[in-house]
Image 1 (cartoon, rainbow, N blue to C red):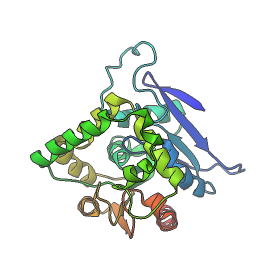
Image 2 (image 1 turned 120 degrees about the vertical axis):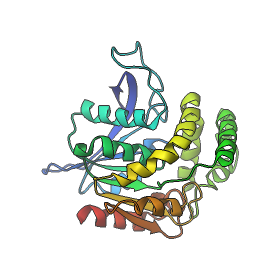
Image 3 (image 1 turned 90 degrees about the horizontal axis):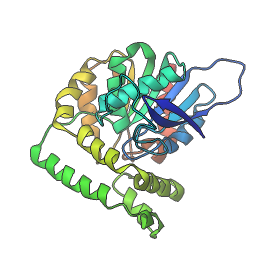
Length: 283
């Protein structure tokens, strides 16, 4: 297990590589809310002929710490749960690992972070893949209800939840249209249970907010990095219609909607997902 200090916080990361005499480009993977790098492993494995793959757990999720290890580093203010701060975490991670220009594949909340990163650091990105992302309109009542529900979900996460029969199936029901292996469902539930409380709650408020609704359309509109946006046909977390709105703002964004999948198309239909990703990368 490898850790690196990123802006004063210990971050877990792992390399997936195949031995080769050729220097390969690097693809970096970003996970979504309350997840971890773990669920990207099968996708990365399928791309190892052409890429060295870097997976990491974002601050407060998976195996990464939520707060400063010791004292706050000089010159760094308290890190927030704003997505812009997570984009800066990514920039610091790449610098810390001495990586130059990379490819990025990001999912859900991670895709919002990646979009911000593309615009802040376009010189660091060759191409980007955003999986299950889009733009939404602000609805005060709907957002208030979402915050209330989300707060309760985050608060009630007893450690024994993962031991209840069928808990993994019930937990993943909203995220899936096609089945994935039981081991994957159980791992998703465990990631959710293990997520830092303040981080999980804080990122709910920053990733789904009036601020995000106001400025994410502008972020998509000004993208200069060639970007593939992949949506699941039956995704109820980030509906495909929201991806269509985002793609319509910029001709640098190519849209693909994968049939019979929901919020995890890379796991629900990996063959179609990988075929479209490889087509985009080789174009």
